[in-house]
Length: 85
Image 1 (cartoon, rainbow, N blue to C red):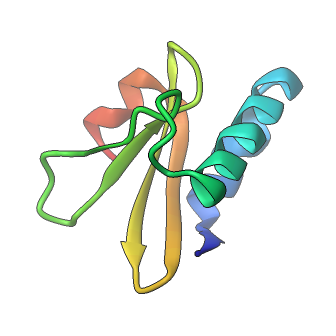
Image 2 (image 1 turned 135 degrees about the vertical axis):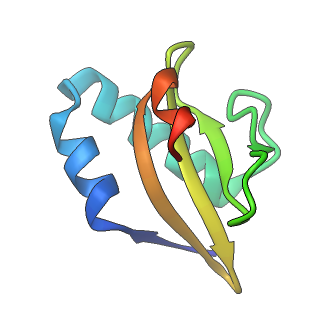
């Protein structure tokens, strides 16, 4: 699998403090190596666009879609951003 970063994801990522950026990096490495890892807590969202969410920390999440062998990273931010993934 590969990662594709949307402009929105990159913008969100750059706004995060450095410690959270490091946590995102760690979780994305896990996504590539072991998507079933319990710390990711990946689950499909109730969205017709086939969007998934993964955990960065207790309060932060990232959203993505899967297309062929690519994870399309959509957004990263607080749990509140899940209202509009």
